[in-house]
Each structure stands twice: as structure tokens, then as C-alpha cells.
Amino acid sequence: MALTLYANDNTWQTNALRSIARYAGVVLNVVTNFSDSDIAAVSPAGAAPALVTPHGGLFQTNSIARYIARNGVRAPLYGETDFEIALVDGWLDWTREKVEIPSKVLLPVETLLATDYYYMKATVETLLEDLKVINNHVGRNTWLVGRHMSIADVIAAFTIAPLFTEVFGKNHIKPFNSLLRWLKTVLDQPGVAHYYGGEFVLAKQSPIPNNPPKAQKKDDVKEEIAPDVSYLFEIPTTMDINDWKTKYANTKPTKPDATNWFWEHYDANAYCLYFFHYKFFNECTVQFKTSNLFGGFLQRSDGIKGMARATCASMVILQEGGFFHIYGVWLFKGTEMPAAWVENTDDINYYDWERVDINNAEHRALVDDYWSWESETNFGGGGTVVGGKTYGL
Image (cartoon, rainbow, N blue to C red; front, side, top):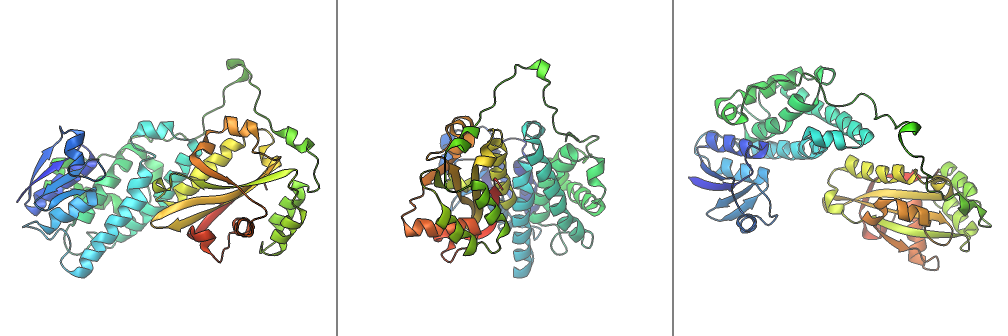
């Protein structure tokens, strides 16, 4: 059986699929010089890798791997029973969610060095914790599934290996003896080694910095006046925002005591409320990255002097349809969003904003839901809450 694969040259995805095809006894004609129209005719996503089959086009590495394995004439690369097939699928899903997607923050190394230090460190810590799962498993088993190497082993090995050869240092790899033994076993298989392209060698030194970048010295830069919203405290009001923050932080559960207090004291002449929703939710397939996304927004908001004191926000992460959504409510001192914040915080443009109509019962109920992280309507149909953050407390 001969198939055509449109793929970028020498990527782990391409080399993993070549290895799988070799073991499956499938002839794979790899085309690396292709046009956008070639890919568009095969892949709805318009991106490589994409496989041309007698039945039509296939896209996404795992889908292509499954198809090649099912149509192979040699080793049972996709499991020998329905149960093993399900286990293979489980490991493929685990590898994509727990390793491949987070690794995009760290690889190539140029990406790692350009990433926010704290976000990068959090990603590394989460990856190391998740890799203990596969380390423990291969400590008891030669292969991920059954008695033979499967496409789960090949995909996982090609995905994980660059972390140990380019990112992790000696201080990271100590707990992973079983994982390293398994990696070497998979990558030393003749059909895999042929495409892996060299010996599996651990990184001599991790490029991960030990400390955050030092701030520039005052002598090196011209002193700039930081954006400031402290003037908002001069606006007269019947509701002290600090009283609300104290009530909110110390009342559990939030409903109905704290939320009733909020509406009884809310001063529409001195405050405004806005709902917000992250626009690009289709990027949010991993919960911790979604949370870090909003955390970065809050960090940059802190760069506006007085912002945390003059405002209060509550965000919930909702899971719906395979994606994580960021929804919430933001209370601002003043009758409009602070201009200095709007003009100096680019993240605002990544969110849809809707002014809360305090005379609308549905709006008021949704505000209560966001303050409390509890909802009888799944936050207006937004999804199931899986996490959240507050700001300004």
C-alpha cells in the first residue's frame, strides 16, 4: 500500500509517521515541497501533516498514525484487542494534552527564552509533574500498551525526547530513570532510529534561567512616568470599594449575603460593571494555560498605578465543547473603564466587553454568579466551572 504525505521536512511529526509506516509495511511518499493549494485540497485545517488516501484527505498527526497502523500488514501497532486499541487512544490523547501542547511554550528553545519567565517556569513544573505518570507506567511495563511497541510509544517518544535533549537539565531528570530507559528502548528500535536521526543524548545544560531577568538599572534607561488611575479615588461615592472587597473576601459562601450587600450599596454614579469573555477560546485547550493567560493579563494590569486598588474583578474558567472559556465581571471606580488602563493594556483587545445593565435582572443574576463562582444556569449556558481567579482583593 502506498500513500502520500504532505509534511514539513525533519519535524518530529514527520519522522514519527515515517517510523510508523516503516513498521506497518506501508509505503509513504513524503512530499515536503508543497503549495498552500496542495494542502488545502487535503486538509480542512490547511496545515501539514496531511495524508492523501484512496478515501480522501486526513489531517492531524494522531489521526494519520491511526490510519497507517490500521492499514499496515506487519506489526499490530494499534493494539491486538479492542481494549488495547482504547488504551493506545488514551495514551495518544494524554501525550497531546499533557506534553505536546505545553511543550510549545518551550520548543524551540528560542520560544522558551522569549516567554514570560513565570509562565515558563509554571509550564516546566507542570510538565515534570505530568511526566511522572508515564515514568511510573513504564517502570512496570516495557511498552505503553500490551506486548509490542505501538503507535502510542512512537508518538510519545518523539514528543517527549526533545524535552530531555534540549530543555531539561540534570536537576530535572533525576526522577525519570524509567522514562529515560523506555525512551532509549523506543528510539533504538531500527525503524525508529533510522528516522530519529542520531543518538538520544541528554542536554548537558538546561537553557532555563534560574532567576527572572534583572530589571534595568535606572542609569540605563530614561525614567518614565507609569500610567496612573489613582485619581479615581477622588470620585465621591456612597460605597467604599474597600468595604466591598472586605465583605467579598470574608463571606463564604458568597451568595446571598455578600451579593445582596453589593447591590444594596452599589453606587451607579461612581462605579460601572463590565462582563468580559476571552475571544480566542479555540486556543484554550489546556486548563492551566488558560488560567495563566488571564493571570498574565492581571500582572500587566498591575503595571497601572492604583489599578488593583480602584477595581475588583472575578473570573471563572468554564469548560464547554472541548475548550476552556474565560468569563467574568469587572467592577471599575468611575462611570467608564479607566482610560489609562485601556490605552496601556493590550490584553483588553483580546476580550469582548459588555457593560452590565444593573436594571436587567438577568445581568444582575449573572454578576452574582461570577462573584460567587456558582450558577444554576451554567453561567448563562457558558459551561461548567472548573476554576477561577479574583483581582484587587
